[in-house]
Image (cartoon, rainbow, N blue to C red; front, side, top):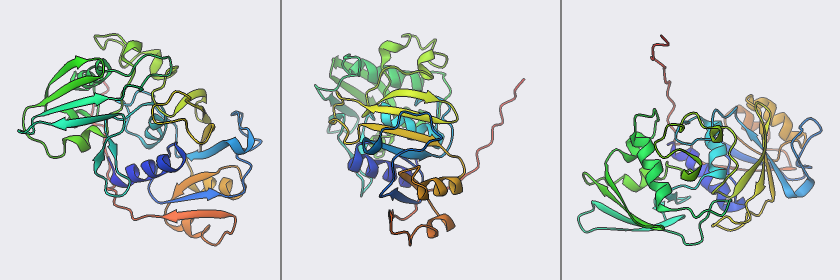
Length: 299
């Protein structure tokens, strides 16, 4: 994943216990009403933050998506196997801690005892095995390189398991930071509904800081804080991601008080640096731009 995008996501998580993503500079409306008359999302004054989302998400299943809008949404619901330090980018404990064997081939993980899904089901070793096995299956995903050297997933008990590698990989933990867990009890054990399950588009269980409350495709996603989140209840009770694909429209909404937070770059950023009612911060961009073509024969 792009290091800058991860940095932006993790910085906002640490400050507000929520997530937003996109390269550039973060800007906040210091005096906004946190909503607008145009949105049908449940916005209630100062206890709600409204964030500009760069586009329409394609699925809530984190193994099936890599677009920015879906990534922005997924990090609110699904816990990561490994966290990333905001400054250094190094892998750090979050949901779980780990130990590495002397030969660097076996990683033993412990999932936090208090980590549960929002329906009360423990986040478990079985969830980890399910997700890794799904990514290693014939299912099409961009995350297979993160788990391609995992030779075995050995479950010790509900909260402890081992990952055995086929060869030493110094970037293994960093790769795991791109993997998000799903509640395995919401899917068929044989992955037969992994790509087609209604849960992919209507998730009613969360393991992250927020729970999906309402979703209007192409318009907004509305979230409520997860009171049972293992990382602590979020400081912002309600969150709304408003879809604004055009960044220029997002800037206008920010200046009008209809959006509280967005990220941007280039000329748009210059438009807001002298606004006294806006707070902004900048950070270096180390992302890589690329064009991906779909060569799959539709026939």
